[in-house]
Every structure is written in C-alpha cells, then in structure tokens.
Amino acid sequence: MTKPSEDRAQASPTKQFFVSMLTRDISLADAILDLLDNCLDGALRLVHGAQVDYTKHFVRIEIAGDHFSIADNCGGIPRDVAKNYAFKMGRDSDDDRDSDAETIGMYGVGMKRAIFKMGRNALVRTRHGEDTFEVPITSEWLDAKNWDPLPINEPSEANEKLDEPGTTILVQELHDGVARHFGNAAFENEVRTAIAEHFTMFLQWGLNVVLNGEPVLPVRVEVLVTEDEGGPAPYVFQKTIDDVLVSITVGLNTSKSSGDDDEDDAGFEGDRSSSISGWTVLCNDRAVIVGDKNRLTGWGDGIPLYHPQFSIVTGIIEFRSHRADKLPVTTTKRALDTSSNVWLESLVKMKEGMRIWISYTNQWKNHPRADQSRFWAEARPMPLGKVIAAIESRKLAKKSDGHIEFNPLKAKVLPVPEEKKPSSRRIVFSRPIEEVRLVSKMLFDDQEEKPGIVGEACFEMQLVKARKQGD
Image (cartoon, rainbow, N blue to C red; front, side, top):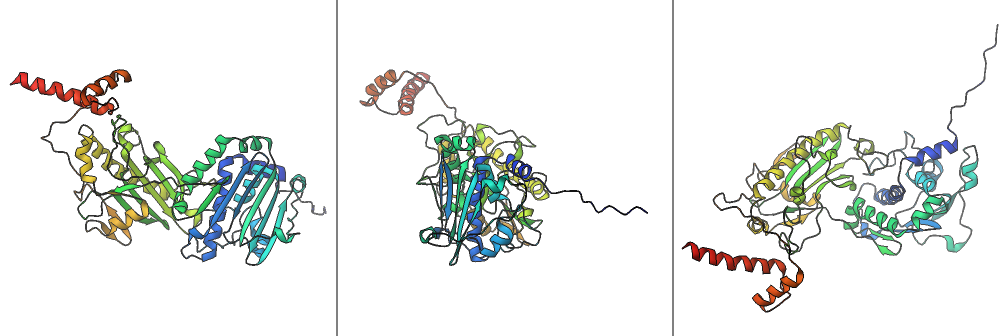
C-alpha cells in the first residue's frame, strides 16, 4: 500500500506581489488621505463613542522631494494593538476595536499601503499614554522573502519621545516618481484641495491640519435655508436603510443663477460662502465625492443632464453607520460602491429632490434675479446636519419611526414667479473698454462706472425716447 504524501503546497502570497498589488489601485494623494483618516480614527477611539472635540487635535503633514512625514496628537497606538493588529496586512474578523465608533476603515491596510506607495524605508513612532515606542519598516524587510514580524523598539534618545500622545510617521527612500511628485508645487496644491474637500466637516469643527507649514481651510458645501416656518427651504429626507442612517438635502446654493454672465451680478444678497453645485456624498463625515454632476449621482438618468442652469442647485447625502462595511464606499474611500442596496435606494430619493429644483429653475430662468432673491433674503447657508435640524421642527415635515421627509413643493414654501409679469431678457454685448469709459464719462462724469450700469443707462435713455414716440 502506498503511503499518503505529506507534502504541502505553498499558498501564501509573495511579499513583492502583495505590496505591488496593494498599492497599484490607489493614487498618491489618496494614500496621504488614508493616513489622515487614521489620525481621525485615533481621535474617535479616545472618546469611546462620545463627541470628539476636534479643536484639541492637530495633524501636521510635510511633503518634500526627499521625505514624507505626518504627525498628530490623536492618542497614539496602544502597544498591544501594535503587536496584534496595526501592522498586520489586513484586519482579522475578531478585530472589533471600532464597534462603537463611526470610522470608515474596513480592511486594515491603509497605513501600510500608504507607506509602501511612497517609499522603502519608514519609521512609525507612537505614544499611547506614557508608553512610547517605534516600529521601523525597512527596505531589507521589504526585500526579504519571508513575513517576519516587525520589531518594536524603544526610542534610543530622550528627545525622540513625543510631547503628547499621538503618532509620527516618517517615510524616506522615496520611489523616484513619488519624489518628483512631492517636489512639485502643483501636487502640493492637489493634496491641499483634496484635504479641504474630503475632511471639510472635521476642519469646520476645528481640526487643525497643516500642510507644509500652511493651515488647510475647509471647502464648504451648504444649501440655503430660512428658519421661518413658511419660508423657502430645501428638500430633506432621512431614513435608516440596512443599518445605515441616510440623510439627504437638495436646495439652492449661493452661486449666481444660470445665465447671469455679468461679472457685476452678485447673486443672492448677504455674506455668503462660496458655493459648490452638484452632489456631495459623505460617509461618516468624510466627503467621498464633492460636486458630482454626472450619471453617477443621477444626472441624465431619468432627469436632465447637468446644465449651467442647475449651477444654483446643490445636493448633499450622508451615510452613517458603526459598521464601515455597510457604507457604499470602496477601499480607497474616495469612490462609491454603486451596486450596494443602500446606494440604490438612496438614489431614488436623490432624484426626487433634484426634480423639485429642476422644476424650480425652469420656472425662474426667464425672470430677473432680483424677483427671486427677495424671497430668500432671510435665508442662511447651512451644512447638512443643521439643515436636518432646522427642517425637522417644521409642522409639514413628515416624521415616523425616525423617518423624516420634507418636500418644499408640497409644502408650498417655494416662491413662484408672477405669471402676469412679462418675462425679462438679458442684453449682453461687449465694446472696447475705451469706448465704455468715454460713454461713462459723458453720462456720469466718471469714466470708471461699472459697464453694466453704463449699458443700462443707455438702454433707459432710448426706452424713454421710444415711449414718447409711441404716445
């Protein structure tokens, strides 16, 4: 009788293959955002599900042609987490550290993937409580065929200890392409914009993010709301779907209306923040997509394709869950999983909200901006959370089992143009600046009057003559 073979077939991935595939589908900017995400997750873990005071936390990022570093004071990595979880290539099924926190990480690869994307030599130094240690990831370890555990070392010098609990990551021996990117001012601007958009909510709550010595300011995504019960307001929907709290608002932003090409037209009155039209999608406070105007968010799919007429319309949708794997987001955290049920159900309501405002802009597109803006004189721009709170108290907001829905069209709070009033048409033309100044001097004794005012005065003069001839 033949003895059964005791040979074993190797099934583990080679390190070179694993590292190459892990970093292939993430951009360099997204890798940096992944590390910033980890800082915020650390701040969440500090409070164990309570509200984080982000004004107490900072993240300092440096990108240069010879190194990358990121430092925070967000609590650091506990030694047992470093030993058993933080540096493993993937997350174990029994890793339930974030069961009480609304984080966005799912697979436990963010920090390692970011480091491998950038270079071949890194040092992670962390302080949790009074315990300070460091973990090196070297080119020798990357080149080795086996998966030996990484060493956990004590700082060799007293000045290497961190001033407060947090983590510092230094990456050197940058890949050639990465070094060229990090030395390029355009790439720094790309990263700054990505942080301003993706972490806008945290920045608005006081998180201090500094990139190469300059603080990052948030990009605000807001819609106009009047707090008066009968005043105009956006569409609002909120419901829990598959253990995910979905919140949606669609309304007007602070931009000029479509067709307002005159540079002197200020749009709605008041002190307004800059506007972002299209759809912004957030998952647990992170902006996954900002200002999308494509079929991804419903444009051209049962509703019109995006057009400049809709530049005054902003939609915001947020998904919240303690289960990050339930969120409709991919591993890069900057793209949507559009096949998920929670996304498909939400898209129906997104389109419902858009149809209201597409109809609204169609009604007003041939009427003077002033006629419309007077109805919004008391409106204030608000982010999604404040919009929900403001609308929830309205009598006509439908509420049941945590489900909130407010349709401003059905509530009859949207302004409607006076049908008897003749519609207006814009008159737009260009003339050499010298000629505009000459006419401005003749009419106003001031050659620097605004071109729009000069043109309007000329038209009024001819209108008076035309009316006299018609009498």
